[in-house]
Image 1 (cartoon, rainbow, N blue to C red):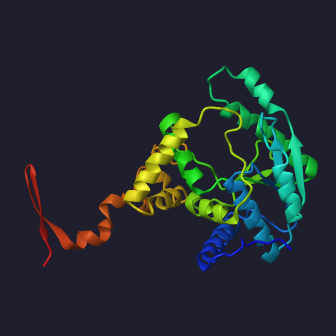
Image 2 (cartoon, rainbow, N blue to C red; image 1 turned 120 degrees about the vertical axis):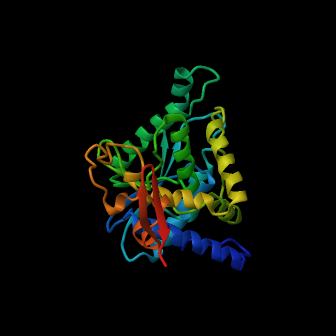
Image 3 (spheres, helix red, strand yellow; image 1 turned 90 degrees about the vertical axis):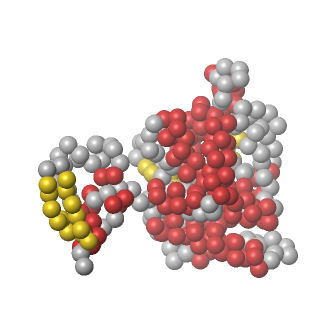
Length: 301
């Protein structure tokens, strides 16, 4: 039996853990991420997010009304100094099914990317290809990634600021070859809660700076902006995330999503919410007179 609780845990920790499990379960249900008979490849970088995701999925597996299989996977990319023994020992301690995939992407990235340039983009593409191939090899039809709510919101702003596109990370998507479904079970979880949970669980964390690449400065800047907003107006990050799932194409400007050219007569859903419910408000005023360039409305008594 897996030990899901740290020694000397507090009631506050139990509440935090239950909240994360509940949020993850809701995201899985809302997007139908995991179904009966699925085999889920749980991608483990060794960071706080992937550790939290694995432990929460294991907890949900024990109580879920459906049967599904979890396979933890860590990709050893042969970065100098990578502690290759940490995750296998941890997986063995948990007694779970796992695979350690070895692929020297580090030398490829160093060969292809000029000195001083960020390696993240090429490294990510290579890693993604290896993960997809591994999933096929193992018969895993779902691939779980540890991105959380804050990652999704940060990506939205990065794409707006630097790509001129209204695009974030979807909680669920199909791979380009249609062979796998990628899921993000932590989509409803905040980074703050995950970090607190991971600290108290004392997971064996592997740092993400082993490759020596430059820090993703633009993402960090966006993160700083969002955190400043959150301090000034608590709940703002969650509201932005909720907005991603509450889109009104008729109030944006993408004519591929909405037929603006064919719009000849307004529909109720096209009404601009900035003006409120005009049908209701119009009862307060009546057209009184028109005189040349002057039109007058008066209050109804």
